[in-house]
Image (cartoon, rainbow, N blue to C red):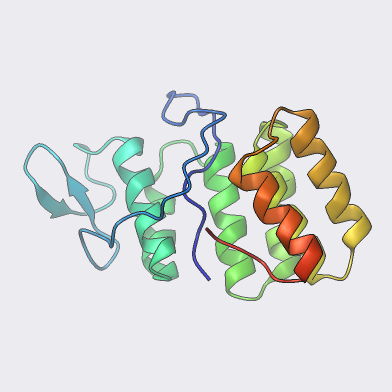
Length: 172
């Protein structure tokens, strides 16, 4: 399964836009081994390189996660400046879920929602994890929260609705 297009984040450095809902998958990673494309030089550099901003790191995490290169995605996540940003926490939850650690995924999603209760993607992923855990009523609570927070018609709502109906989880 593949990672959702955009994480709904608010970070202290204003890297991520809350309310985004892209549905197209990202392109393949530009780099390998946890490196990140530095746009000015158009070269792959270490994820901790000071020339990088978290937006470049974020896009690399998204690309690696979509490509199921979870170790590389974690390397880049570890280089993010704000480790408490809800998007970072959501990605950690996503990777935990995709690698089979559902309890850890739930913990990461809960932390993301403590940071930003309006993170619709974290709510969708949490709901999908609850479906996998055999807790559809709790998953439906997350769906209701997505709708109540203005997420009607978004990928977050659609994917969780489908997950509740089919028992399958979705990335895109």
